[in-house]
Image (tube, rainbow, N blue to C red; front, side, top):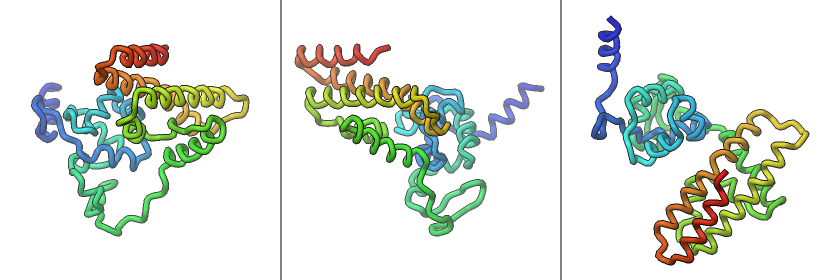
Amino acid sequence: MAQGSDDRRGSDLPQGDFKGGGLRLSSLKHWRERRDLSQGQLARLVGVPRHYVQRIEQGRRGCNPWVAKKMAEELKVDLEELRAGSALQKGEKGTEGGARTRRGGLPPPAPRRSSLHRAYLEVLLEREVGSAYSALEESEFEGRCMGLSVEELLEIISSRERERKLLKEVLTDTNPLPPDVRTFLEELLREQPGEDLRILAARRNQEHSQEARERLSRAMRGLLP
């Protein structure tokens, strides 16, 4: 009886786009950001690692159909909209909350809370530390690091460490922080060292100089807990 129920539910899911049945979710990033969720927050809601969400958004892997369905539920959007490609970004048409809309049918979205947090964070860091690399989105930070010399890259990573030190002090301050601000900062402090490690590791793999590789390795060890 239960098996038959599972089979019927499975038949309602779309066929996969990738080998092995994974679904391509071309609009996942669009809807995730529209719902003011980070990759890590969405991953926790559906019970998968953050890098799973990241790789799906980058088109580097397909999503398990059941996970895709759960993502659609958490984002309050039809599953087909997550698979819909770039139509939503172009403003042609979309489904939100089950209603079909066209260009001009929705008012301009309010600024996302995380965007406001990052704007205030940039001001704070620039004033207190003199740099604000921690206020960048992950993709923006990766773009900033591309094409830099090893020396320049290590200086930016060092700046991010100084910024995180200040933010840890902010979190331990006796003055209470609004819950959403505290959650934003805690997630940033939890995820950033891993991002820095990944960037350093990728650069080390590209380096032919043994000295440069050793410098990058030392910087990586400094980020480990």
